[in-house]
Length: 319
Image (cartoon, one colour):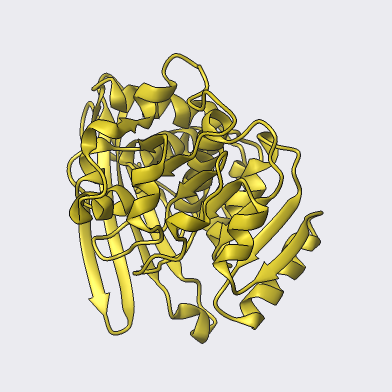
């Protein structure tokens, strides 16, 4: 019988779980060719602006396969609605039977994306983080910072946003969690103060320019997950000492690397896939003055791993 779990049940289970090791292992398996992931299914909408992604796949020899549907409609905040929604479906690899429906409303996608940022920072961020820079004021801008707690003791945050109201709300929420938060409408303020920067917007034009980036800075970019989105000046990737992507194949079709390839500022021979880069357990950053960039467009193996862990915990009676 198919088991169906609500968002409330999923959140209760997640509170008891740590996904970092499983998702990191998933990235390594993906780069080793052990994961079957077809191209992303995608719907884009103009009025109102939004997109829906269908990501799916399986790990060879595993017990299940996963199909994930996640949407983002970026004007929903004006309607007091969540900007993201979705669900995950877990099927048996042996019979094809639908085993579990996770009605997560996009929550697990947010978690697995934040965990990816945590993993990347562990291998690529400077050893001493002076301040964490964040572009964006939404849920991912919050979760990325929260999940960095396991990587750095830094609690100083400089956040860029488009409106005073959204910046004030972000500041209040994060101060309540123990962060020292400075808000700004100027990208240069973030680049000047921070050596670990997270891009978490749906921007379609660069927000951060190459001339603003100091030596020793790490940037994790995750907002550019469609053909038209771009948060970084392509010259940043050209200048970077290290460029890592979660998926080489996807980076040719979407994300910051795609934009830099399109403009001629980057060649693929400079780009490393995350699973390969971290497989040996060694830090990817090799010196304090390197500029490093991680371009994360989101890979189905993250959904496979988190759905598997959460589904197992719920089936075992975690709630």
